Image (cartoon, rainbow, N blue to C red; front, side, top):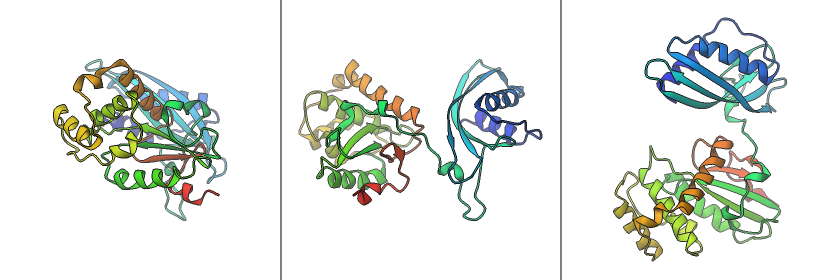
Length: 276
């Protein structure tokens, strides 16, 4: 979150007057008025994109909000997606369970809709399998390096039971090399190579590496391929990566690995092991 938006969030949290917010329209109106009170902001637009009933807390609803603002000083545009909670009388950015000390925000998520599944992202299994598992991952994420191959190798043995959909979600601020690495993977897949995703987790390269030549050298060594820098710049590669990132944005993926099991976010990441 940018420092500007952190300041905006704090401004709203400290607001002493909370209007009734029994619908998404009232939530939008309340947030827009409060953000607009910030003297550093020239204009602001707030839109509730989705709302989900909080199962753990009766009468509370989670509102998935998209905010777009223009900074007065330099006309810079900022945007952010966030979650707000309301019971119709009170609105808050954070909601905690007193008994468990758990953050309710960690328990709500957007569903993975049917239209988000695409045949291009199906890497193993049958689309008509009993369970659909979605994986958003960065191949240089340390946890992903262990978890993803293990999960995929387990599920791919049961093609009628699991349909595995994989979406590239490189984290450029943490692992710059992952950005070019996933482009190379898509480029190789477009040439007809199979099992690229699993082998992607075997590539040994410094996550902070920024040289495309060094990244491709490590990639090609592992894959036994000959992908060139120009292969990463094709419209087909760009389209595939943009599609994956768009879907991640629609379901508000924030980190890796993020797993969806039959349309719901699996925070345990282990529901596939329990599937009958």
